[in-house]
Amino acid sequence: MKVFTAAQIYKADTFTIEKQQITSDALMERAATQIFNWMHVRMQGAPVKIHLFCGIGNNGGDGIALARHLFEHGYDIAVYVVKYSDKRSKDFLTNLDRLKDRKIWPIYMDADSDLPEIHPNDIIVDAIFGIGLNRTPDAWVAKIIQHLNTSKAFILSVDIPSGLFTDSVPEDKEAVIKANYVLSFQVPKLVFFLPETGIYVEQWEVLDIGLDAEFLMNEKTDFELISKNEVLQFYRPRTKYSHKGTYGHALIVGGSYGKMGAVILTSRAALKAGSGLVTAYVPECGYAILQTAIPEVMVLTNGKEAIEAIEFDMKPTVIGLGIGMGIHDKTVKALEHFLKANKLPLVLDADALNILSKNQDQMDFIPENSILTPHPKELERLVGKWKDDFEKLEKVRQFTDKRKVVIVVKGAHTITFFEGRGYINTTGNPGMATAGSGDALTGIITGLIAQGYSSLQAAIFGVYIHGKSGDISVENTGYQALIASDIIEGIGSAFLDLFKVPEERPDTSEKDG
Ligand SMILES: NC(=O)C1=CN([C@@H]2O[C@H](COP(=O)(O)OP(=O)(O)OC[C@H]3O[C@@H](n4cnc5c(N)ncnc54)[C@H](OP(=O)(O)O)[C@@H]3O)[C@@H](O)[C@H]2O)[C@@H](O)CC1
Ligand SMILES: Nc1ncnc2c1ncn2[C@@H]1O[C@H](COP(=O)(O)OP(=O)(O)O)[C@@H](O)[C@H]1O
Ligand SMILES: [K+]
Image 1: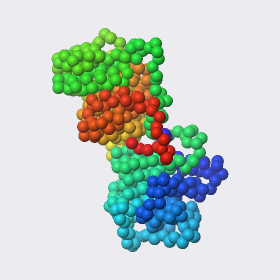
Image 2: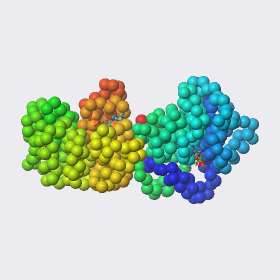
Image 3: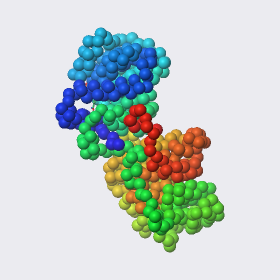
Image 4: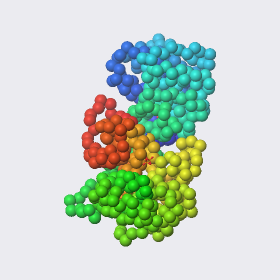
């Protein structure tokens, strides 16, 4: 699913209105009806107080139109108009008149108004600001927002939590609604997936308001959301007469005294992801460990307790490099030497990234289409500090452009970058914040490249499978007890899940995990 900017959404809006020969009011009515249906299916007329806080733009208009539907179906509503400006939108006014026609009189709120009492069991509909927010809300509006946030009532945000910008991080962290649920029109917004802004969105769902399908398909976007549908498109089935040679040979280079487990995890994950053959390249102290831990993996050694040279007379398809490798002087030299001679695609992780960050001149030797998989600290060493999530994304984009590599920015929503585009993952859970889970990811991605997936496909697919495996495994372990080995064990189930038909649900829209 594509992730549009606010400008693109407005464009889609205009395009749709022209092509479908409808009014903007009709589009607002669709939006409000969709939200009403969503609520009505769940509430079934329950006598719960619903407080609708509406702005004076189109987001507010959605809220006012929703209030009318709720009223007509007998819900107990209170409507507030937060008058942060005199520039009320046309469709807001139309819907306000319709509400007044039904003898519903909103409570107008300005800087001097008292804050209404809200019971923890009430429901709040947040329609104060939508994607039109372009400056920090005034202090008195921020006060209302804080009042709603501290009310303990369930907050349902229309389109986007009020106070959240679509393209920057809010300056006043207190002036943003913390939404329990966001019903977003047609497309999710990028800010739902970034660490600094995603915290305002507990759950989200997209509601289809019938924006023109052709426009949505043809418009190019900087970001795409990756779910099962997207990864299924490049899944490579196995063929009857294939053999292990068909599925490549992954070489996993890493390990040092006390960190051999990382290589076990990566090698095992590469096998489980389907690599035909896997060889681990480790210092001698790892030989017995590897051979005992994974009988399916072959082992080459160099150096005693740390790698001193990376040389081999086998022909790997791909090399995963850096896990648990350490930054011993001899290892640093070995990496430099190897990079200068190497032509194979690389998956670079952990200490390989740390070494390269300190020796930026060696970056020139990273082959194009290699994959770098930094966690946030490694990323900072690689691209430098950033002031906020948006600057981080821009720095990564520039780095991938300059180096022609894929960067996998790991996190709650891992984003894979390549050729100026970001692919946002939707699987995974906080149980995966555990030692070695990144090593497992490196193995999965390396194992996929071995089988012939392109670098970009392997990164996107690998991140998806890794997260999905974590989601399946956590069902048995709970968050705390999930460990990297569980993620590796779950890889098979994650592949099987690709072909499971989803159960029928009354509502059809996509949900966040
Ligand atoms: N596009 C679609 O497909 C559909 C969209 N729909 C809905 O429209 C929503 C977008 O509506 P919108 O453009 O009217 O903007 P909205 O967020 O209501 O803000 C209103 C105005 O407030 C102003 N303003 C900004 N910041 C401010 C501040 N801090 N303090 C005070 N004022 C501030 C600013 O105007 P300005 O003062 O800058 O001229 C802004 O224009 C969208 O989220 C969705 O809910 C659906 O109805 C149908 C289909
Ligand atoms: N809160 C979270 N939600 C989803 N995935 C997470 C979360 N925290 C971490 N992960 C995933 O777990 C992995 C952690 O990688 P990393 O920090 O390199 O671990 P390690 O160095 O221990 O192997 C990444 O793939 C990351 O996306
Ligand atoms: K809103």
